[in-house]
Length: 227
Image (cartoon, rainbow, N blue to C red):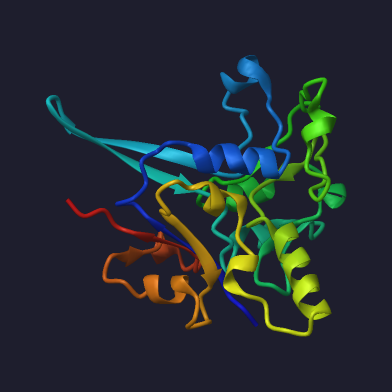
């Protein structure tokens, strides 16, 4: 079974936000408006953390893109009382929105704080329906949502390769954030496939996983910044 994962090179990330914008568009991520944003209720499937180091004038900013880590041992799935979130057969942490009861136990259990809750009915612009992605369902008030590694793209790519009786190529399944990154800081693929770039990159001497000591085995690997 493939082990879909992501490698993010912090040397290359400029914090431009292209990955965040592409993710919002691809996955119909709703806007909550400025008032709710002030309460920390913004919804992100891909976010960028900013870490400021040093003191003026010797200051530098580190940008760290942060999607869902799709852990191999996800604590969020263990606390869901209705199995609305689970580790699927592709090794991805999936969400079933119509099953979610909004208890938010999964949000508390996630050590990476990558899940968002819909406190209100999402605000949608008048012309939203013209631009929404029909491959991704819209979420409603009272449910938790998060990054899916654009799993709808995986389904399409797999069906096409099976139809043509061939193996799926690496380039056929790439999340929107990966395609949008102008510096190729984000790379995606199968960790277990030696032909995929991520298989080599995750073995780099710069590779590390966030909060690895927790034993969650996240499938997002970072390459540390070199000065």
